[in-house]
Length: 366
Image (cartoon, rainbow, N blue to C red):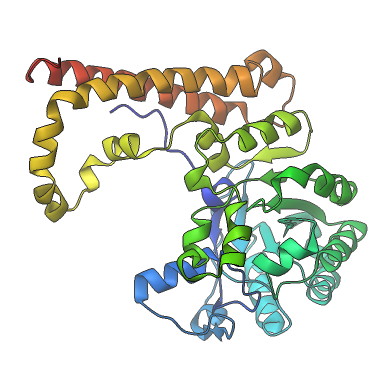
């Protein structure tokens, strides 16, 4: 399959490298990806809210990373937060990162005391520091449910104001967006103190990571209203928020949201794209079932190709109003948008060619 370029998703949309110094996080966010990954990879079910400092990482030297236009060199931290318990160690690591000549993206659900200390101590480096603070909702009741031990909304706003008034570059991450219907109110509150981008994106595997199966009925109701990337293919709420916010100059949408709206996700397409990664045991187990379905496989792929074609049109016409409109708004990453569309078209062509090849060797579908 021809793929024009490798898409960058997740934190790779922001930085070249990520650095962390501890395992665990006091914020106790229900949807924490790092906690989920640790449990899957290691089977470890330790108390995530009692973090352990990784001294090897604290003391490790930091090299100068190759700069990339439009990106920060290093993101710190990415799998934990900066808290009073690890502040001194975080300051040491920040000094190492900046001392090596890197630019730095500091991502945090900001604790005011921590951020003010860092801001006061690194004034000479402020031209190489970008703060990106996470605001997933404005409603404190929602935050208390999903992020029970993280700083309150009002404290995060005060930390944002402090960094802004002290001359630092500031930006916002609304990912996961926990209150999609009131995101405009959230943006209007924080926008005056933001010098850079406001990134918006849905969550990923939110219910699975949050222990939905073991949750109470009351908690399940709160989880059910959340827009989850896995379950939001062409979700009208996501499409609605893009249409409502697309003209705001600071707003950008994480790649996951782009792809969801474009209709790129789905089991049939993902399986088609990931043939080379299949486990041999799974291949053998599914051989008989695939042979049974072979006659209709190429038909479904033709259908997928048509959907991809329609999705590409939706992406640049319905969502962004055409490339002419995009050109007028340089804050929108048009080159990324074009690459997504080109990849969709290439994928469609590949599927159609594969379908024709298979149809010549399969029985006629009646």
